[in-house]
Length: 272
Ligand SMILES: [Mg+2]
Image (cartoon, rainbow, N blue to C red):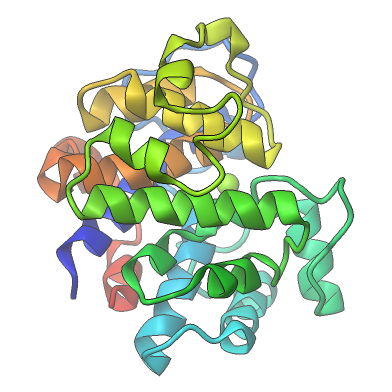
């Protein structure tokens, strides 16, 4: 079992769980300091959502087969959707594009299908030999538009650079197609909070997550900042938290949050 994968997955799951009680709440309408319960989905503290479930389904497939197989990953996604596999106590949060794609057995290619639903679950590929084409194919199980697939390629590249010890700035700037026109580490760092959007659009989520990572110096501050942006709190914090887990390590995740995290046995069983 690779240690960076463990830190990444727990980093993602803890971020997800921190955000679940505040999902859809507008920025500035709530305060959050830790692992709270109830709120939006009325779940006990430490409950993680679709972001973590689909990440775990992907991990479990890679663990079982020793390779990336989109057919098997998709089958596990449907197992989650239909019978609550890879969840603590059932499915309570599913994106429209993901639901449609799994139902039809075909990733959605239209421009409106660029929510953050594949970005939030793509992280395990950073710890495999997956090529860019493999990453696009895994995104395309649900999100087959180029914007979503490109976002996943960039996120995996950034995660790999961080896992190999690059600084956050170097990792962001080394990603293919992300250090382009107006998105690089220095321009992201200079964004004011009011410019950072935190709804469901995949590029907003990636930008917001990187903005949180670049602007903070520990796991706790990074994921709390992500939740405090409001909107799609659980996914922004999951996407940021996965990277922050890699940067600061498993030991950088506050123990009191890990102890409140539910379903740790489910997580452990899926790590490869
Ligand atoms: Mg969610």
